[in-house]
Length: 421
Image (cartoon, rainbow, N blue to C red; front, side):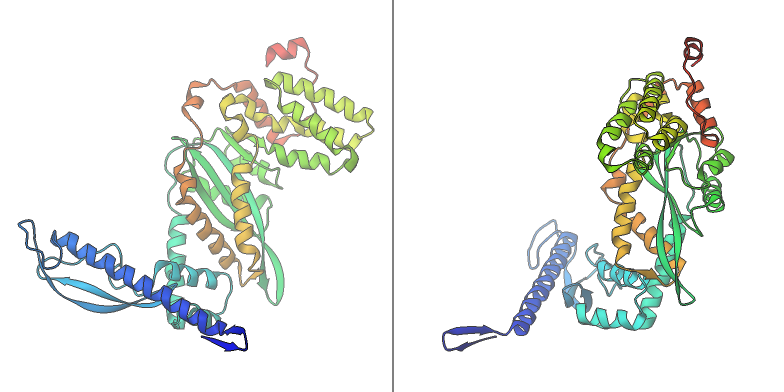
C-alpha cells in the first residue's frame, strides 16, 4: 500500500481506495448480519442459547444469500427458526438488490443512459453486472407504478390549486426538440399539499392546458376556490371552460418580472418598490387606488409600457384579497410550485436531451412522487378552517373570474363604485 523512497512515503492510491471499499463493505455486511440476529432473537423472545420461560422458538441454523448494496455485494446469514417463519423488514424476501440500487438503475435508464452503459456503471459502482433483462424489467415495473400513481382518483376537495409547466429537451429524429411537462399541486381540505397531476404537453398552449385540466377533472378534482399560476398562453381561457366558478390569481412575482422587462435597469429599484406598495395595502379597494396612483407616476417617469402593463394586469394579481388574510402570502404567488420546479430542473439539467417525451415525463413524475412522500407532503401548509370561517367577497370573486378572460383597465373608483364593491 505504501513504499518509502528516501524520506518520501509514496501511497498506492488505487490500493488504498480498494482497501477502504472493502472496509466499508465488510462493515455493512457485519451490521446487516447483526440486525438479522437481533431480529431472530426478538421473534424467539430469547437470545441464542438463552434458557428462559418466555422463549417461544429456537433456531435451526441459517442459510446464506447475497445482496447487492451501494457498498458492494455482501453475504448475509439469514437465520432459520424451527416453528415460526423468519420474516424481517430488514431484507425483503427474495430481494437481491438494495432499493437504492434499483432506484439508481431506473433513474439512469430514464435519463437516457443506454442499457449497455447501465451494465458498465453498475459493475463499476457495486461490483456486479446487471443483465439487460433486469434493467428492462425494473423500468417496466417503474412505468407501471408511476402510471398508476399519475392516474389515481383525486379524493377530497382542494381550495387552492397551483399550476405551472417546465420545458425539457428530447431527441426526435436526430433533432433536439422541446417538450413541456405540466404540473399541478393543491392544498387539500386538511391544509396539506398534494401532487395532483403531471402530464406531457406538446407545448404550453391552450390545447395542452385543456387536456391537462380535463385529465384533472375526470379524476375528480373539485371544490377549487382559487387557481394560482402565471399567465401562460391558453391557460386562463381553459380554466374558464372547466372551472368557471373558481377565481384565478396571477402570480404576483411573474407579473413584477413582466413590468421590470420594459424599464431601464437604473429605475428598477424605484419601480419595484412602487409595485410592492400596491400589494402591501390593507384591502383590494386600497390596492386598486394605489395602483391607479402608480400608473400615473409611471407615465410621469416616461415609462409608458410599464404603465400599460400595470394598468391592464394589476387586477389579475389582486384576486387573493378576497380570501383570508392569513393565506395571502401563500396564495398570491406560484412560489410553492416554483420551488419544486427548481428541484426538477436541477435533476434534469444533467440529462441534456431525453430519448423521448415519455422518459422526460417519467423522470419528472418519479421525482414528484418522491417529493410527495417526504416531509413536504406531511407538513401542514395552511389552516384551511380559516377559509370556512371567512365569508368570501363574492363580488370580488365575480370580478376576478371576469378578469381571467378580459384584461380590463383599472376602473375609476368613485364613491358610488366603492359602495358597489
